[in-house]
Image (cartoon, rainbow, N blue to C red; front, side, top):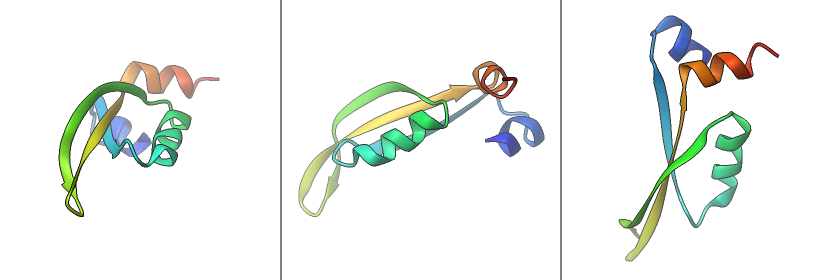
Length: 68
């Protein structure tokens, strides 16, 4: 994320993960990302529709988290 905000001058970085994989969500939360959306039955995996969770972080949030 540091590269994205400092070198690429991004304002927002986002990621998504399947709800059936909460471990991925925990990693994103540890990185400072916040849940932004829940897309119900958005992708089909192995013949079963799965929900996607979107998470994101803004530049100002990243900067605040990394000042401490």
